[in-house]
Image 1 (cartoon, rainbow, N blue to C red):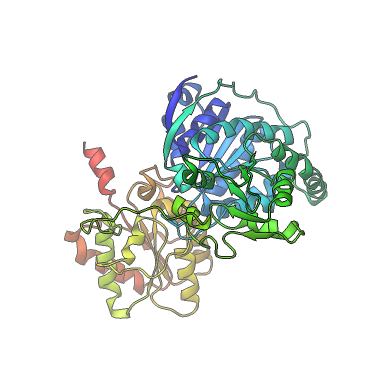
Image 2: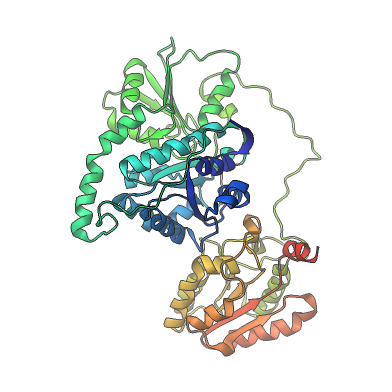
Length: 528
C-alpha cells in the first residue's frame, strides 16, 4: 500500500478514514487539532462526503458522535486533555450506552503544558469509565490502532479512547497504509433500549460493563501492541507505556537491553504480562508519559512486596515530559554530552501579533479601568490571554473555557465593581453562552467583552461557530438590545471606545461590548 509521511495526528486521521470513517467531530485544541484538519482537506473524505466540521465544544462533539454511532456508522471525536473535562458527562455515560457503530475518542495530552493550562493524564478517564484505551508509541501504531480500536468498539459495543501526547501528535514519520474498508451500512441498535439510560436500564448496563472487564483484559493480553521482551538481567524489569518506549529505545540504539521490557500500548493493563515481569524481576521501573497511573496500579495490586520505582519515588521527575536523557539517568547510564546553546539563542515569550485587534481593546480597557485600580478584568482561553503580559498587563485571570463570564458574575455578587469579562468569539460559542444566560437571569452587574476577530485564531484559524450572529445570541439569552454595543478597535477610535466602555460600566446590569475587527491574518488572506 501507499507510504505516507505523517504527523501523529495525521496518522490517526488517515487511519480512521481507511478504517471506514463516516463522521469526525471535535473542537480545535492543541495538540489535537490536526486530526480533523487532515480529514477536512483529505480528497477521499471529500469524495465520500465524510462529515468533518467543527463542533461548538467537546461535549456537543461527543454527543453528536453518539448519534452517528446510534445509526451504525463509525465516528471519531477529537479534543485535547482539558477538552475531555468538557466532554466528561457524555463520555462517562457512553460507557453505559455503549456504541453501535464504532467510536474512537481521540484525546491529545500535553505533558509540560506547552499550550495548556494544566498537566492531565486522560488514561485516568478511561480507567474511571472502565473503557478500553490505546496509546500509540509511534505514527505507524497510531494508524494501525484505528483499525483495532474500531474492531474492539464494535465487538464489545463500547467507545474506545485513543490517547496520544504532544511529541507524537506533532512529530512526523512514515506509515504504510492498510487496505481501505468500506463505511458501515446504516443500522439501528438491535436492543432498542441500548441508548436509554433510565435508572432501571442503567443499573443493568453497569453490571454488564463490569462483567466484561476480564474479556477486555484478555484483549490487552493478546494485543499485538503489548510486547514482552525478555532480558538476562532480572535485577530490574522495565514497564514502558506508549511514546515513552521511544525514549527508552533511544538509549539502546546499538545494543539490546539486558533488562526485561514490557511495552504497554493497549489498556486495561495486560495482567498476565505484568505478573510475569514482576514475578521474575527484583525491581520494576515504570516509564510513562504523563501521570503515574500504571505505577500507582502496580503498587495497589501486586501484593508481593516488589519495589516499584518511577515518578512517585523521584527516580523520574513527577511533572513534565520524559526524554531520552531523563530515562538514561534513571537507568544509571552515563549522561550523553549535551550541545551548548549559543548565547545568541534566547527564549522568546509569545506575544500578540502586530496589528492584532486585541491590542487596541486592551488599551481601551486599561484606560477605562485605571481609576478603579488593578484586578477588574476576568479573562479566558485564547490569543487574548497574552494581554496578561507586558506591555498590556490588562487581565487578571485565566482558568478554563468560559470561566471569564461566570467568575465576573461571582465577583459582582461579592460586591466587586466594576466586574468585567473578556472572552473571544469562538470561546463564547464554546462555553460562554450559558454563563451569559446566568448573568441575565441573576441580573449581574457585569460588562462582557466579546472580542470578535472572525476566527479561532489561537489553534490555527478555524471557523467560529458564532460568526455573524453574536448580537442575536446575546439578545436571545435576554441581554437588552441597547446594552449590546459593537465597536471597532482601532487607535483612531480610542477616545470614543473609552466613552462607550464607561457608559456600560455605569449601567447597573448586564452589558455586552463587541470589539469587532478581523484577526490580522484573516484580514490578510481576505485582502489577498
